[in-house]
Structures are given as C-alpha cells and as structure tokens.
Image (cartoon, rainbow, N blue to C red; front, side):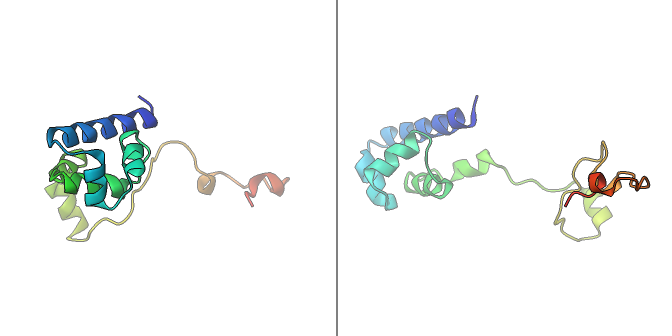
Length: 116
C-alpha cells in the first residue's frame, strides 16, 4: 500500500467510528473545531496528524493511538550498558563506507574528495 492509501484507510476507519457513534460529520467537526470540509479531507487521508488525534479524542478513542505506536523500552541488558542514561541518538547502519571513512590519501585530485 502507498502512504496515501494507508492514510485513506485510517480516515475510513475513523469515519466508521463516527458512524458507530451515530454522529454527523458536522457534529464531529464542531466538537474538534474543524470545518466539515476539513473533516472530509481527514476521512480522505489528507489531514494533519494533530487533527486525527483530536477526532479520536472527540470519539473517545484516544487509546487507539497506544496500539498504533506502542511505547517501547530498552531491554534490561541495554539499560545496564547505558548505566541509567537515556538514549538520544541512533547509531545508523554500520555497513558500507561513508564519506567520513573514505580513504582520501590520494590527493592528486582534491576536488573529487571534497563534498563541499
């Protein structure tokens, strides 16, 4: 599925929740502070994430966000390695060569080795 298709599917599921609550699009839009047209765009998958959260809150379904992106914790062994520090950065992939590690010992043509 494309990103747009996933967004549209989420919008359709939110609209199904609205219908199960027997609410009109205008009622949801008023509860959230959106126009009915903005709500229709949300259903079509063209909404800001904050608006999606607001609609889920209005439908009393904010707990769905917890299932959408569950909170994860590091393993106990990883926490011991870090000695109580909270991780701030990802190390990225370690395979292949990066610009910082390429060999620049051949200085015959420096314009090719400089990336600025």
